[in-house]
Length: 319
Ligand code: ADP
Ligand code: TRP
Image (tube, rainbow, N blue to C red; front, side, top):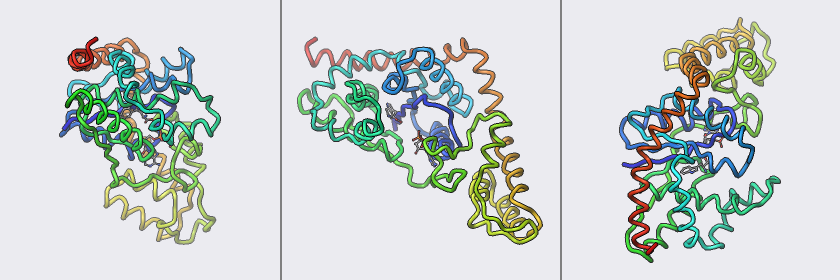
C-alpha cells in the first residue's frame, strides 16, 4: 500500500498533533510504503519570507525525524527538492475546472480570515493533487479539513485518465476515526489557533506555563476529585498505560492532593515521554548540514520515481 502525506512546516507542534497525526504516521511505517515530505511550496501561500520559510522547513524536518520518521525505510524529502511536482502542477492545471477549485472550503476559509486571495492560494489544491498523483499514491492520511483536497485530486485524476488512458492511480483519503480529539488546556480541542496547546518541544519554562494554565474547577485540596471531568486527567491519560491510569484515578478519588500536584505530575509525564526526541531535535538543529543531507537522500529517491512518471506523462501529452 503506497501512502503519502505532506507535512505543513508551520509553527510549533503540540501533543494534539502528535497523538492525532504524527504517532499513527510513525507507526504506519512498519507496514506501508510511506512517502512523506515537508510541504514548503504550500507554506509559501502563507509567508513569502525566505529566512522564515527556510527555518520552518528545517525545524519541521528536525521535528519529524526526531519523533520517529525513518529515512532508511520511508521516503522523506523537502517538497521543493523534487521540482517535477511543479511541472505536473501546470499540466494538471489544464484539467482543473474553475468551478471545482471555487468550491474548495480551505480557500474560502482562508480568504474569509483575511489572507489576501492570490492565484497561489487558489490553486493550492492543484499543487496538492500533483504531490499525490506524481507518486501513484493510493492512500492519503488526512485530518477532516483536508478530505476535500484529496477528492479534488481524485477528480482531476479521473479527468486526465479519461483523456489519456489510465495514467494516474486514484487516491483515497483516510481519516483515522480511532484517534480521539486531544483536549487543550481549556478543554476545547487542542489547536494552535486557540492558543490552548502543550507543545512537544517546549522549554522548561514554557512547558510549566502551558500546563499551569490548564483550567480546573475549584474543589479544595483535601476533597476527592472527579477525574472524569478533569482536563489534567484527560491529557495525562495519553501518556499512561492502563495501570498508570488506574493509579491516577485513585489519587483523584482519595483526595488530599490539589490540582497543582496533578499538574506537576503531568509535567513530569510529558517531559519523560519526549525527553529523547527533544534531545535529538536540538542536536539536529545544531547540525543543519546533517539535516540537509538526510533530506537530499530522500529527495534523490523521490526524484527517480517522479522523473519516470513525468517521462510517461510527456509522452502522452506530446511535449
Ligand atoms: P492546529 O489545529 O493546531 O492548527 P493542524 O490543523 O495543523 O493543527 O493539524 C495537523 C494534524 O494534527 C491534523 O491531522 C489534525 O487532525 C491533527 N490534530 C490537530 N489537533 C488535534 C487534536 N487536538 N486532537 C487530535 N488530532 C489533532
Ligand atoms: N495541505 C496539507 C495540509 O495543510 C499539506 C499537504 C500538501 C498535503 N500536499 C499534500 C497533504 C499532499 C497530503 C498530501 O495539511
